[in-house]
Length: 150
Image (cartoon, rainbow, N blue to C red):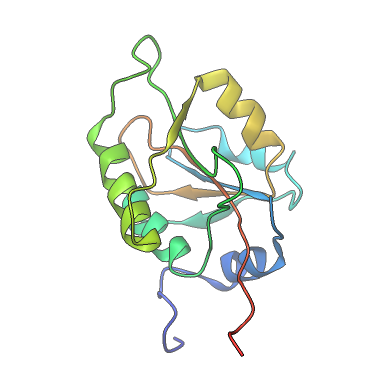
């Protein structure tokens, strides 16, 4: 255990978050997402795991991970097939964590299922969660940490 770091963030996840740079994508995926096969195509090339619900994982990640304020798609959700505007409870919960981490409303964009798979393959890494509810899949684009004020 380390002070100030969410205990869900294991060593492999911390290393990946630290290694990522501005503009790199992180995928948080539910248990039904083809995480292993997609993760093999990412920059990291291996699957990371945090066996917790998606909202808890998002909260832990966003406690250290800045979202990219220079783009409109820094936070994205996989849209429901045939119902692109419907937002299920798992996505509402993650939206609440994004807003809390950023200290303001930061709406996610929706991405069609197969387009989400393509974005995931180009990501830096995939974290598979223990989330069993459908459509618990998210993409977060890394922003920057500004220098300390002088």
